[in-house]
Length: 377
Ligand SMILES: *Cc1c(COP(=O)(O)O)cnc(C)c1O
Image (tube, rainbow, N blue to C red; front, top):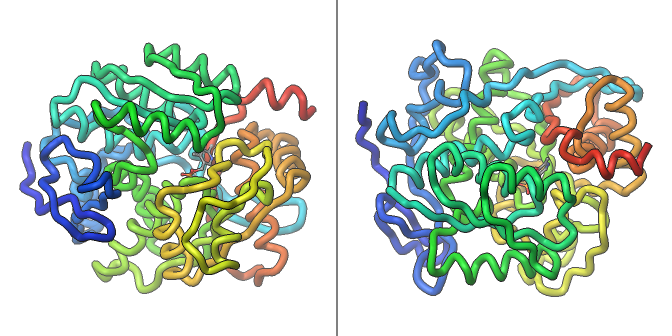
């Protein structure tokens, strides 16, 4: 089954257009690319026989059904949780994905695309979860995967990536230096980067689709999301915008972006109104998964926040640990990075009107971070 699609790759500043069916991952002078893929979202086209991401396949940029590389992932439950502060929010259980984080949304589409291009080798870099996710899908698709990781990556995450037979390169440096080295390596390969490659965001947009379906097409007032590289933030903005432009929803929810106070380039960027990411001072945070000092799509992250009338909230280490403890005490073992988003949700809830319909998520499972958790308890 093949669907004919109107689709192209476009340089984000130059607007130069490239064939989306060629194996390119950058424009001239390594410019970042976006995907031009106009989706007419129609709820009647959802395949309700599937309880996974393939229910949205008519809105995904994969033309041939047989190209999908899938673990029957996604369509995660949306549950109501009442927090100790009294705040009530709807939480997507995205820690139930096959590799333990929502990154599988993006990897499913990205790796399906890469498989359809006939590529046999890819390069990735990650603070852990994206590497594990891409590596799992590469294993399923029979594609060789090399992953660059910062020196501080927890052993359990390194082991998970190795388990999927990816080759692991630990870089003697931080997240930013790791990305630079992976970028060089990818020049003679294909860069399956969750932040750089626009196909990844075509998978993360399914979060917005699921929320709308599960809320019976009632748009939330605010969606509280992590903001490291912004793969979910930008993906959600794409998804909600598609539904809005297609006339399926009448407003876009406020997108609330959560950063760790110890690594908050967006918050600093907004204060300084400058797109110069070089000089940010950051320190370690227990939320290593959102510790991204220089997100390559910072400008689009700000657009998603401002375009949705959302805001940026930063959380301290103790707020993250308290949120983690509260969730664990309720029986939800989430990753410390994931607790940063919940800490942000609680902080947002303090100032907000309790009649707001709030959505957030558990982005990753605590089983990935038992070494850190051991120290916390
Ligand atoms: C990747 C990740 C995040 C942050 O997502 P970004 O796309 O970098 O903004 C948050 N939580 C978990 C568990 C993650 O794996």
